Image 1 (tube, rainbow, N blue to C red):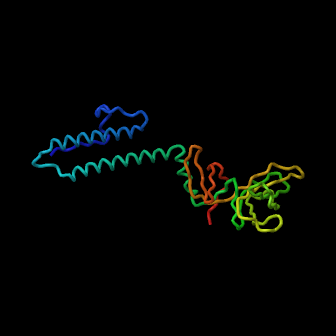
Image 2 (cartoon, helix red, strand yellow):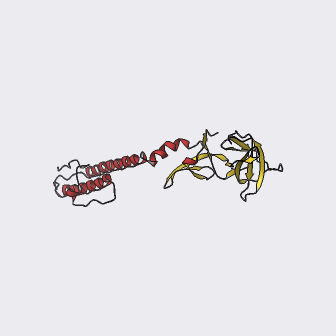
Image 3 (cartoon, rainbow, N blue to C red):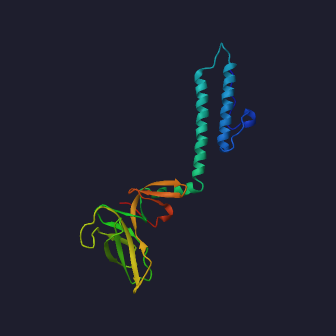
Length: 225
């Protein structure tokens, strides 16, 4: 019986007569070359087998399965190597955020329950207020907060004492040093992270409310629940 010599990683484009593509990775080119060599050798083996003692078809199947398994393992290793480098490493490191609550800037969804937010403390302020506006920019609520208070909460009541309607609201902390107004600080609402994305703009965080923001904009993290 004719046997097939080890194929993996032993051939080259010069041996197979195939010119390597310019763009694929070196490992992908080598795998393609090896597979062509494998098929050629398998064909020669079939043509030159003893007709009185033919090779069992299961042996061919085992050889094909073995080559396919090695090919997939090499490609998997290449993918993991790419993910572990550069932005992929940042994505893997940020995976711990999934299921956690993070503070992100942007519209704050209100569904009837009190909303917790985070805002940078106003250094040098003598007084501060949390201002709530609806999607049209109309002020619906204003409440006093401590200038050095980072964690804030809006109970969902408007300035007239009524329950606010469900929807998205913008939150801003306005502060004053005496009578001098200071730059307003946007309040960031907590939301649970459900997904991380590796995009052309960098690693992005996706929350259960559908908000998408750059990982770099996360200013606070806390355990969900």
